[in-house]
Length: 159
Image (tube, rainbow, N blue to C red; front, side, top):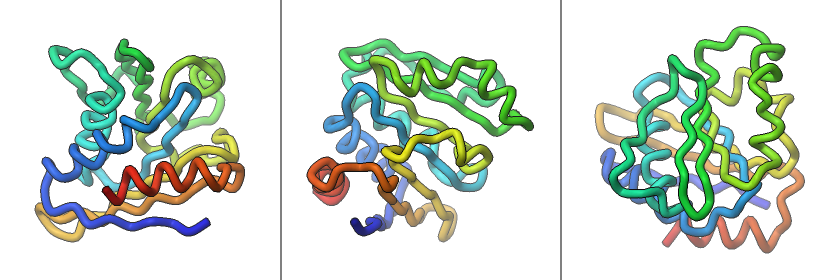
């Protein structure tokens, strides 16, 4: 299965991309996000929350200092940020596995710091900054993603 790359010309386009993807995500899906500070990861997660049906009154923000935000909805969203974590042990102490295998969708910023913790069905999303507004966003399936499921995800990304 091939990776898919999207060019986003604004924060709004990045948010809309997340919304489209959020509409097809299911409990147990894990998105592993990587990219430099300011590349659009949190904006993308704001879109995911909207697509998953999180209450519009809930403010989705970066969990950099608290490590995890939980957003209720038809499919809960668990938004992790591994930026401040230094050791794999710290992630394990969070009980991350319960979230990854739970009833919600997980989006993990700075996932590339601890790649070995992610299952084979994770969806890898890399954010690259082209300039102040433009982002190159690359989606890559984990080796365990079923082909039909990846097709559904690609259709949402490209629509």
